[in-house]
Image (cartoon, rainbow, N blue to C red; front, side, top):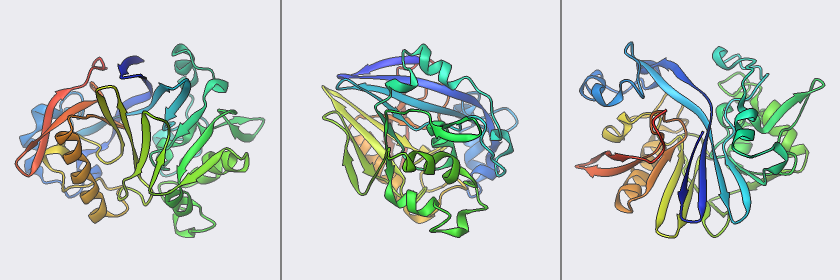
Length: 297
């Protein structure tokens, strides 16, 4: 748990879990071997293991802005049946304890912002109580991109039922929707004077980013537009989980260019190490200009 101040906004990293997630060549099937070898010294040990497994953090960004307590994404969650990802099946983790250590009780959360609705960004929306999934944050509004809500709803799109998000809509989205806690948005959505949501489709139909501008500080909570620093040097290459590869590439280049040109602190959803970074242009690609102010985990 680490905390920084960006203008009038306090940002705290709440990590649910960290570790190897899958082989690099499976995660990024079209990234050439040459790239992994050329940039290996930049990736090991924070982002890649010695035996070429991608290291990833499942985490929430806790923001305090204009008197409200805001969570960006809610990680994997406990007790969830996750047949597509056995490592995330029926977890028992201390995420809520880590929130309490940051001074946040479940009833204190005012707003939950979802950059997209993959299973590792929605898990703590609900908890199991007496065999029923109930909202974890009873007083929170959940901002969800409409395009993702409709895409991952198996009643609307039966093709998703057996995929990577199997059971996630039913156990982590539908209960908060039925409780009247969900606001669906499209294109762009203001959060407050410091924060706003913008659509960034490609990884999923409704993928989005949160932009922060407060005082002289700028940040981009970038969700899953990239999963490894190697995608700075190789922005034309996607993860295997990107739903629309062409759009994902275009979105990544656009947002990395904006972050570089505007000197924005880039905060991807899953980076380990220092978690955040500043980027710079390097020819037609990008590079790490400097790592952010969070301590290296």
